[in-house]
Image 1 (cartoon, helix red, strand yellow):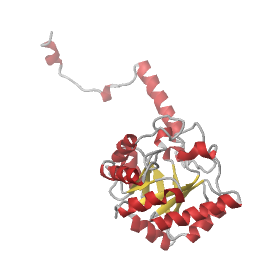
Image 2: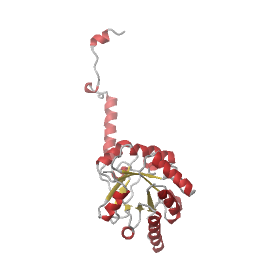
Image 3: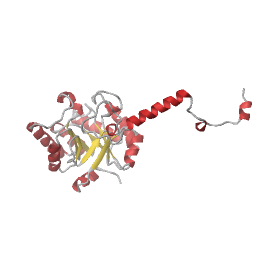
Image 4: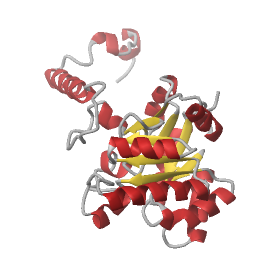
Length: 275
């Protein structure tokens, strides 16, 4: 059955953990759905892992629509959430609603995600009032990396922790159906999870959250430029892929691939008639 906003809420209420992964292409999305993943986030992390950018700032609405639609075509049961990229919702409430609508219509999203707390509550309320589910995102918010002074754990001070709690309650009141908690102390994430009626999805926020999300290239060992502390490699596919590429390279250069079993035949009498 299709995972929906109602599914996520019911899972929290029943104490069932929610699994989410990022995805950016049809083939991988199909595998994630077959594996039983509850939700896929088409994250603006595609700027890093797909486009080779140093951050998520340069990712555009067109990027999110293109990659999002590819993922959505593979998903019949998995909820597809598409990130709203930097400056696609900060300018005005009207801009936010219009761009959220584009992600739903053109990207075929089931929900959208945006970063921020109380400051973006007017946008969250307006988007949800338009019938579009919103997942919020607190803690380390990559689009604000310059303002935060880098990729740092958030909420370690009393003031910082109190702000996260207040922001979480505010975005819930504004209508968000779930919230990603990124890179915050585990005990704080557990406290926020217990205070909220909506599900929390953790990434670097401990096991007390209602669910977890990882960038799939990270958990498969495909992205080696840096590995956050919270990432576990569930497989080392990067090394296996490199070995396969090297084997292909060797066989092509040695002339052993393609072998006869990889080729198509033609009758010799046909060839004899050619000039």
